[in-house]
Length: 402
Ligand SMILES: Cc1ncc(COP(=O)(O)O)c(C=O)c1O
Image (cartoon, rainbow, N blue to C red; front, side):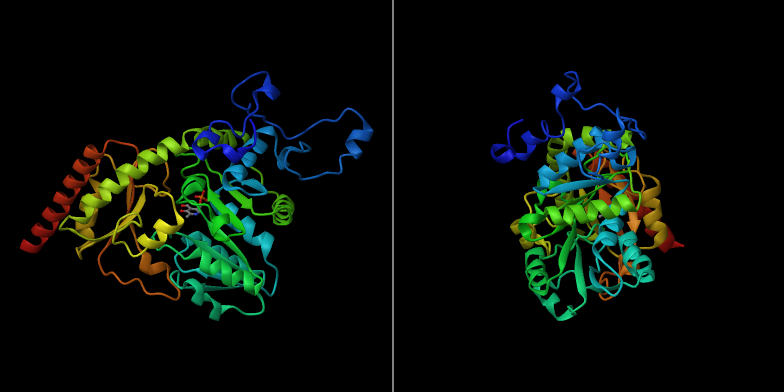
């Protein structure tokens, strides 16, 4: 395909990361299962001194044409210098951080970060002599007061995947740049289609491709995308040195998922917005946490920095017993209970945002839920939730009467 400049992302999705001419005309890149790559001559074996480079097949761990196709596609979508496929979203977080910090560094991590990301920062990096300090996700440019001479990096996740605060990444990135620190951002919620973190000032982008990029709840996959060549080489070298590698079948599922990403997201967004509006009117609901909803505290920043919203949102219920929440969730027919999100199917789980906070206090006393709005019909999802709310009310009424 010709250069990307004049192509829109939904068109690119159908054309990047594949080259039929290289593969006997097959539309999709084949799934290369490979560890050993053989060479014809001693010269070519010993002369292969370009290790670890994207596009160079040298040893299976460093990737095959299947891997390079996905890395190239996601890098082009984000407008980066290169991408590195990782075996999970968490591996992408850990791999990027381990590539960019060293003993003695201080890093700033949003208090809204995904809990296992917090653990990497708080426990694992600590053992390697890196101090992680959590900051209020809503600090914006005021983050400046937290910088120290040894601050190497700011980690952002916007919106937070449990609590949905939208961060002012341009303001944070401006301060970070002045202070000589990098900005790493987890862009999983928005995908490359709904947010362009490099345009906002980020240096490194993380994707848990397990979510929307894969899109079918069947692959574990992550990606790190670097803004420039020097960051790309640094992260590639370190993650290769640590032995990170992804099986080709999961890479293929990532490529397969990418093709329909725009169409799926359009549907996730339309259904999620309608459902958020419906939920907001319910008597049982205190608050809907979804930045695309007018009136949400993050709505203005979302409008400024994002071009769409995916299907993941939070829900704060009016105070009610744990039993009533369980009665609601246990009987759902379409919304399943399970971790992860971003697949074609709807999910609903209880969450506990107050438990994973270091410097901010979660303000709402009511139980919180996280909904992933899948690709099902809106009316059916509403019926399932209506029946769930009826179970919740009945449980509350019955226990109040006894
Ligand atoms: C925002 C965010 N980042 C990263 C991850 C980690 O992804 P994975 O489950 O593929 O390790 C998750 C998983 O839920 C997530 O929600």
